[in-house]
Image 1 (tube, rainbow, N blue to C red):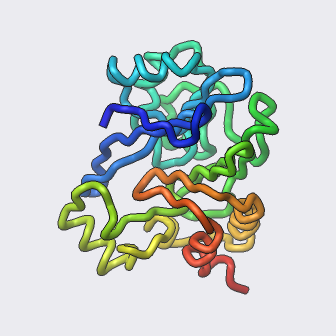
Image 2: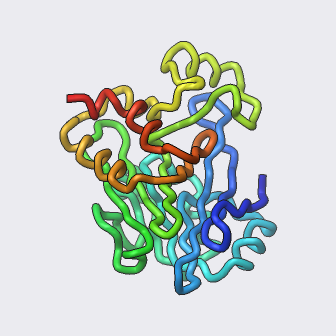
Length: 235
């Protein structure tokens, strides 16, 4: 659980970390991106053990910490303590949900100049209960989401507890059926605003999809996304 996996050779690494939420044992996924200048972006920070720190430091210098969603903030302060010189970019909404968190910048609806050209981003606006900023790594065609899609089912490589199976199979119908997180399904909010953000993601035509929860997806990513988001995308 504390070993980085190279996902895109020389450019992207991933690492899973345990999370307990609503009585369920889940896993999150940290993504580390090496920019063309060698600087590192850490997306969705995890707990940093000595082993994890050693592996990250072998990749380069951590310059930016991205906190991409309003439900992905548990280990930000811990990560900042280990990398105090890194700049932190916060998803809108967290400044009020977690006023104790220190940050340098808010994530916006377009790529920051520090990574423009290599990473695209879009803020999903208009949602009711949850907010996130989606990212797209241009060189590798990799989309990175935290809660806009979750992919847990029979091929889940962790042991799924009874509560997780109950909710995913019988309440939210998400088992073997990738969908947005329940917090989205409980109320998409202003659908036209949300739809604009989702269409921006689809315009990137990703070949790979890194998810925080569940199995990553490769191939026709847009086909999976359109099905998962049909409640919003449909006229």
